[in-house]
Length: 517
Image (cartoon, rainbow, N blue to C red; front, side):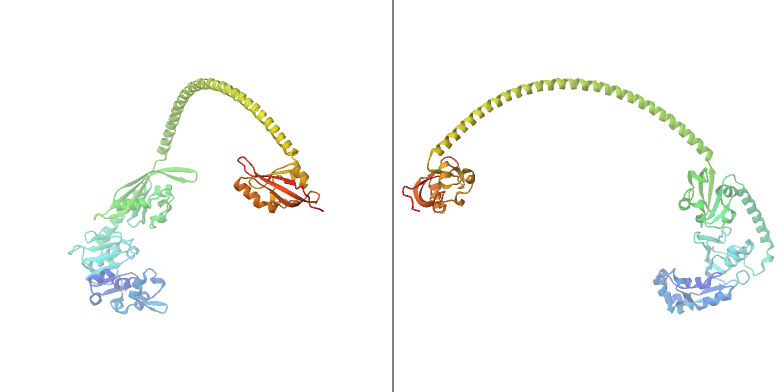
């Protein structure tokens, strides 16, 4: 059966009602849907109808649609998009005045959004009568967010208050529509005037309330601001009709928007206590009460926010709290002083015990020092004894060294002592006279690297054999040059050097028959 978007922009709403959703396609075959569904798009503006009949839209006007939906129901023609022709044929456009023309009957869905709000109460009553007549039993009425049907609960039941979806009740309840001018309904006008006076009286009572009060509808739009709210919260009558979330009081001094949503969903009254509000240099405190209101159907229809000034009580509580804190602080200081005295007494006793312990430790340390002094004296005596022994041994060694040097000096032959590494360890006076090299020049030098008149390379095999066999060898006669360059025959005797160091002793002397110049 045909839905009818009445008194709305047909170019914006008709395609959305003519485009089946994926859920609808699972229930009805698209061909069956196109054959059975009929949509009436009406308006009083011929220009708007002409634009709607074209079915053309700019890319910007379709930004709210997903690419999938746009590509499914629209075809792109250069810079514009056109509505699908098969769906477009199901929409009938026509001029219709909802205040004068006869309504289209037996509708399943009637969409009239943000239109009733521009008419007075009497005209709204006439229009709702027409809507009731146009809808079949259990048909749906879809209004704008700023529009309500609170006084028509006998004819319409709420389906979704937040989205403003209502359903016509079954039966013929309510007045029957008669196409007559609005002015002949004098009885309804009298009732409207009486209701207006009652509403005015109620508004005066609310406006004169002693506490600030703000009333919101289910969409969060401000519908009432009383005198105290305007005086204390800085609101004006111009704020009526504005979304509450756009007002400063919705988030300052406390975030009320989340509390309003919580109160609406939980359907219970919420309270925010002692909320601080600063205006210039002054500070005020409020207890804020958020109370949800439900209509006859049990759905949420409004929210009342009341502000109770508790500045004086808050200051008194703060003063009492301050005095109590000062008393508690003084009591704590006394307790702390008492504890400090007890702690000081304990510390003094502990210090006395520590001094006694220190005295005992000093006495023990003194005894240990005396014992150590005795041990040091004993060690000193032992060191003196060892020093005397070392001095005696040194003297003996000096005597032995002098004796050895005297022996070596008394030997006319040259005597050379080589260590295990074949370096010169001793070079006597005879060797100095024979070869002309002083002892300090050859001591510690490799013997076979010395440059003097003896051909040492010829003696190397004999020295190695003597060190290996630890037996004497010689004499070995070699031709040599004396310290003055005179050719001589030199007899060399090889003896292994005793002791742990090893080595060889060479004794060199001139042969009996000298070589002629």
